[in-house]
Length: 118
Image (cartoon, rainbow, N blue to C red; front, side, top):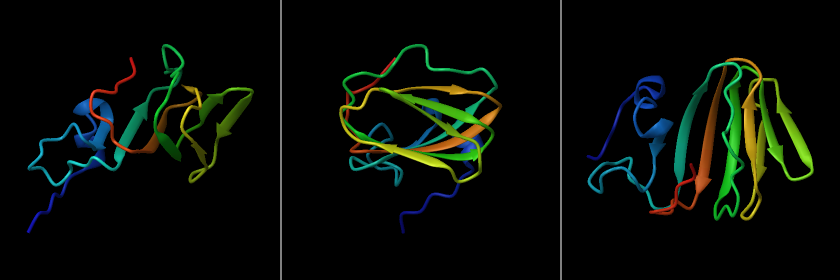
């Protein structure tokens, strides 16, 4: 049986918060070429150093706790209630800012090897 039991807070300390995706070892049940899942823990004031441009994946970001702002072209989305989420498709540039200490879960697909954003 291929099972993994973990804790997102603990496991997020590795792989920049990504819990599942192509970057896990091929024999790890958390390896996936279809989807990536991230548990993001952000202190107040944390923000993306630069906008992500030329994105080749679809993304869903869900607020677990805190207050988190996502910047999209021509639109600012404020996630302030647990469960608030934003979904954006391929080729949508984005950035983000944690207005308060925040925990967010991000799901992206597909999981593309060799594709990383600084």
